[in-house]
Length: 311
Image (cartoon, rainbow, N blue to C red; front, top):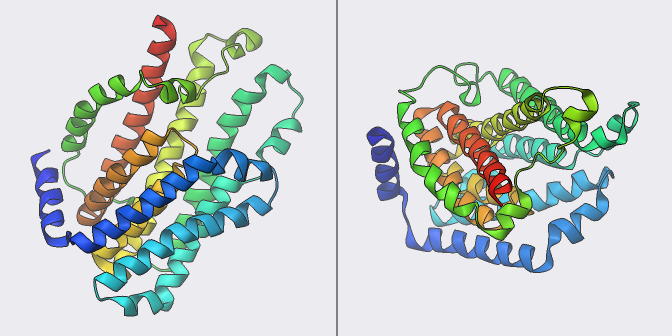
């Protein structure tokens, strides 16, 4: 963990700019306030569920996050010319498009309804399938992109060029007490656990753990997709064009992805996205982020299960 701390400390020392970081935080503060005051995720985006229009709306939504922060970052670091580079636009637009298609994919419900099944299985099948589909709509296009642009050595971070991953496990252990404390917050209890299909095992005649395990594996797989896209393409892929200035636009877009979850989670995603982005930039791989992200996600699920059991 000491090596990771040195990486983070040295990056902040070299990169920190009061004006830049203040403007980025101001932009995110205004965005978070607007989103949670008007409940955009529930009142606006959800009104277009199962409508392909939602993909375009998310493209605009995430585009605002990414390109506003990219412009601020490049302008204040005196690298505005990078904002006009063709390669920057092609790769970043591809990333925003993949993200928008992943979040706004409108056909999962139709696929589930096309299968003949007990209606009480619908939620379990829906969310398990949705996370599996996310792999097809995120990971596979990213593989195609890094093959096309011939980034076959780094592969957007899914490579073996990494230092010891032991430090990431240590960080995860440090985070666990905060997850436990946060699990008492009402918003946390309302959102987690994301697995809520308690009757599935009875309906299918399976052991109770089996449908839960299938769901949680699919749920965890989606966090690999997130790391592959955000820390892989948006940091490792785009640093060949933007350098370390690729990190802050990724952080802002990552924060927007969390809108609709408890506000505390959206706010904490800023710090989490920043730290994981810095680690990915210097280690040139995403595996540490995958460990932390899946570890935190499953720990939040477990904390919520315990809350349900003892309350």
